[in-house]
Image 1 (cartoon, rainbow, N blue to C red):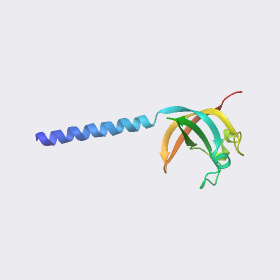
Image 2: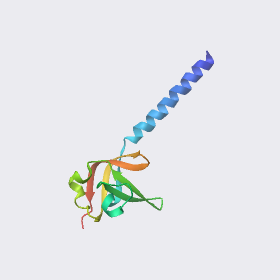
Image 3: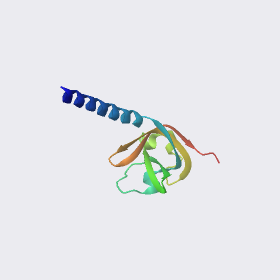
Image 4: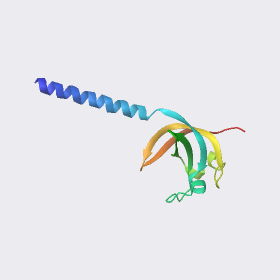
Length: 113
């Protein structure tokens, strides 16, 4: 009985921990860096459609976050399509998809000159 109770307690704590991690994943963050079109500016292999991305410095490395949106159909994409790069920020929820860092944007802003 004592062992069963101990296992249930451990299992409950495990679910609480995983649930807490999942809740943190839904937290909005603001990334500041260079906004660009991944197809036009980065010419990445496998990127066949225009997609907005933001490159940020993290721990001395440049990390690319792809915007999880409608791509070239988004109002803000035109400013960077064709290879243009602009400083700015993207606010949204970060997640990983097929090994790539993604951000579901709620706000995209270009820095004013």
